[in-house]
Length: 80
Image (cartoon, rainbow, N blue to C red; front, side, top):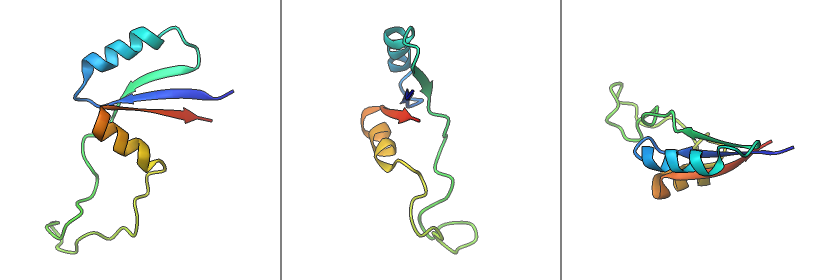
């Protein structure tokens, strides 16, 4: 059975509280705060080593979820 997850930006505690209130009794829905504090690697050549970005692509599985989190303050994903 699929589960669903709301991930809420750390900048929106009231939204987190609201979603917890609305979906708190749903057995297949969890609401969590985003645990990331910043991007792990810089994307410019101002890195301390001076080598710049080495990643070939974004390794996050759901790029749309990351964009939604930035734009709307939350994202809703299905977890199998």
